Length: 199
Image 1 (cartoon, rainbow, N blue to C red):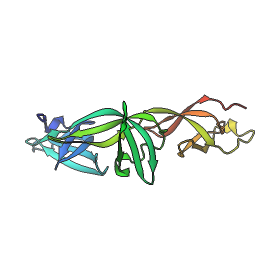
Image 2 (cartoon, helix red, strand yellow):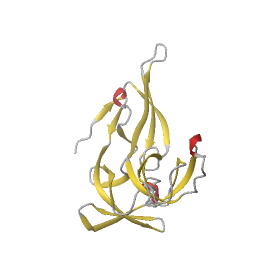
Image 3 (cartoon, rainbow, N blue to C red):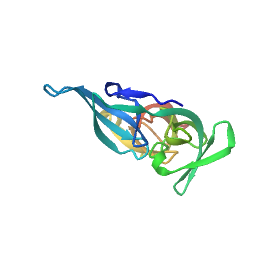
Image 4 (cartoon, rainbow, N blue to C red):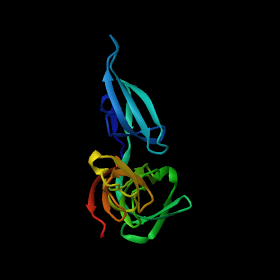
């Protein structure tokens, strides 16, 4: 596998680079000149291992290794005492766990047995999963919702409800226990009601 070197001005948003053997996602990039000096790319980098954000400047003569990262489908099985279990999408016997640092909060809107994407970081002789991406939109059942009070709905207020995965989310006042709602997992926000609870 040959690694691709990125010039200083190619280290741009959403690219993945390797620094000190660790993969980083570029979450900010700004190329500018200071008076008569050579241009500099001021970047913000998020470690895909620890999640920490650092700032780093790349001068005109500097390059960075592009990280070899791809995605593959895996299935979320269950979690138990801080351990998160998955399997290869088409091979239920190929089970493995991922630590909570890798998983982060990304599973709070994901039901068991849901296929998700794993971010896989390849180095010369190894590969490891460094993160997971749930589907952008998911549909979940509301398991607890405070009752709506008549006359409340006109004000367009919000209330907090609990979903079948145990996560909480703010919804409009008309959402009730048993409704199925759509959530955007990127913004962790309510999108719409998909199905009204049977009365």
